[in-house]
Image (tube, rainbow, N blue to C red):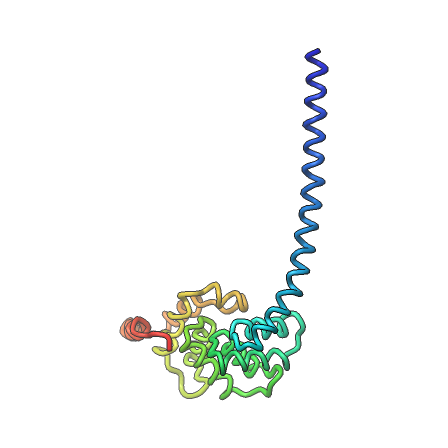
Length: 200
């Protein structure tokens, strides 16, 4: 009797484990289908919201066209709408990158700098990082290490956003390189400027 009960319990345990594994597989497949369906719905929703003037949706459409469709012409169109009408810092940064790399627009450093500056002033860490690079390397005028350090300090408040763009964009590394080139006095001055800075 005990042996029979033990075998029944063992069979039930095995059956339960097998059913759980099969059920998990079905559940995972259902989730994948749900995500794929949701993506199409999200794009429709973004279009609807973008036409209503919502900058986040316009920015999302720009990302969609740039990253998933590699359609820089449409990407820049949506980034431009979000950047100008919506004053979206992320869209301003993305537009600057398109100008810097000549994707969907002509390669134009002055226009890139205009959008990097607007993005940085809005508080976008990626724009701040590139303002640091521009000031350090003298993209517009002679290098200004104090301003560069200030922008790198500000960008370092959200380093994952910066490195998420590209791994080589490393705020901590940029600051460490600047530390070796600058006096303590200049670093303190840059820190004071960063402490006083507020997004526009």
